[in-house]
Length: 367
Image 1 (cartoon, rainbow, N blue to C red):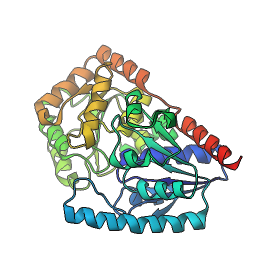
Image 2: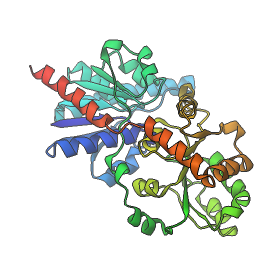
Image 3: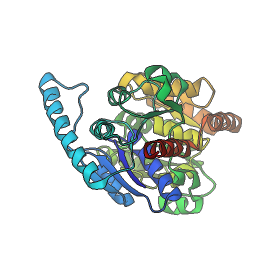
């Protein structure tokens, strides 16, 4: 089987694609997989580390750009369609999956013109521009939430959930303690703000550290800051002598998750899918500028079921977040109830469902 997985830009689009690739390789060891992305996307950094082939195309973002930049984006899109034709002609894929983001647009569109089976994944309640366009061309659409069906042609839609990487579910606790230099017996707080970090979360956490001093001997912290904030965040922890491992980026995410007793993070679809599949308690801080405010919608859905706490970005400060951290980590019953609600929300077999849909499309084309 030859597979193209197109899209990325951010972890929210990229990691479901990686999860899908991992499942395909497990089920079909002989499968050949190529990722399609851009040099500025997260995929350019992550995919080579994982050993997959990556082809870069020229497409770039369109939404929120000036008129002049939009004109340039259209020219880049046309160039990318030509690049995608060349990739398809040389690789001859059996199927193309679009995982979202503007890098998915030219490849899925071109594949559909060439009558190659196509499936797009929509992880959020409200679809982005690329998937709205591609829904007219794709053969099937895999969605995470029932509400999303209203945005797409209903006859193409399948409710599957968001693919999560299988290794996320099998973190090694002892290995994790060694990797992060932490101790057994302490409660572990995991903080991250997406692949690039989140300055607002970084500032609130560091401002909140003095309020957490009564817990200092009972907790330990893993904090992904992003490259830009790494130095000053590290200094803040060091000044107050907290037991903490500060990293610009966490590559060993499964091990970070396995240690986590409480997670503070944004509310992107992939993050929410991973946190709930693992049944972790969380404090979600939705990114306020996400398209169609989808992160707040994601967080409110969990909040309504008691599966998380939520702080809106505009309300976030050190005192508020430290109080919520203290409340959850010092009350075992609150933490347990949140974990149970989180686990009930999670789905772990999305990749399998999506690959089954892909298989049926390939068989239909060959018959």
